[in-house]
Image 1 (tube, rainbow, N blue to C red):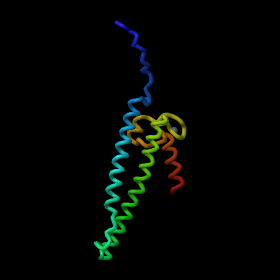
Image 2 (cartoon, protein in one colour):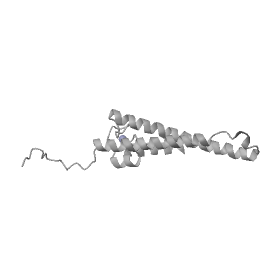
Image 3 (cartoon, rainbow, N blue to C red):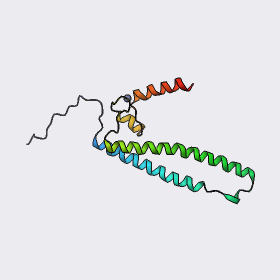
Image 4 (cartoon, rainbow, N blue to C red):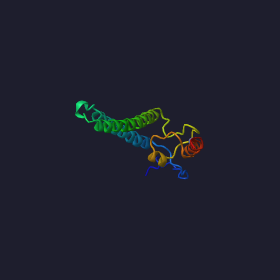
Length: 137
Ligand SMILES: [Zn+2]
């Protein structure tokens, strides 16, 4: 019979706000992602063992070198992603996760679900991409 807990829930707000449970969701998502990358990095390292005299044939050598370059490129991309994940986890810790670095607005949950490491809202990202395109070509 108690109506004490019945607070009027303002449902007029359509914009989804980051809640504690959302933060937990992104935290575990990012942590899992990070662990996956760590595992992959381990596999890559194992695959990068120098074949020494296994590859006496110069043609095999060349293949090995280009494979290695390929792996290094992947690793480079992964390590950049890795840093992004770490900084996203840092932002969760200090409470700035999901806030656009550029305009300070909240990034929509849907956008964060699609790109959990993003630091820009969709509007700023679109603006940045437009600038990059102008500079790029
Ligand atoms: Zn923004």
